[in-house]
Amino acid sequence: MDIKSAEFIISNTDVKKCPTENFPEYAFIGRSNVGKSSLINMLTGYKGLAMTSSTPGKTMLINHFLINANWYLVDLPGYGYAKRGQKGQKQIKKVIEDYVLEREQMTNLFVLIDSRLEPQRIDLEFMEWLGENGVPFSVIFTKSDKMTGNQVQSNTKKYLKKLKEQWEELPPYFISSAETRLGRVEILNYIEQINKEIG
Image (cartoon, rainbow, N blue to C red):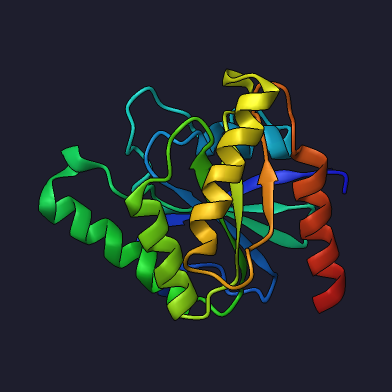
């Protein structure tokens, strides 16, 4: 898939105020500092589309970007950022849950996982919650350029093994790097394939 256009449309915290068109939506979510904004900018080829920040936990809103005038890329708040305090975390949890469970246009949720880390309980619990609620999702392992190819393979295998303890069938997964653009073609082709199937 070629990205010919990508434009920011709206930010809000209320799922009812999301765009009204019936375009498919592909949402991106992950723990704070997982490299979500960098990945979105790499996928779209627009460097400043999603605001990257040196402070984790900056995205507090649902951000809609219209891609090729026929589907939305949605940047969701990161979860599990301790410095937000309990009230802030509760607000973010509500924003995420309302969007994920109520947004009919949401076609697939990409869950971003830092490929350098051991399986984190917060990610595993989040994916389990998605499964319990029948939410279609895929996994993107980020920051693969920070390790050797062997380490990436080994960490990914370890993660998938952990997932198999919960899942009979593993979700689709991709290995990516915002720096080297690894995974870009595969992720965009996956989105294109789903668009064709539902179109």
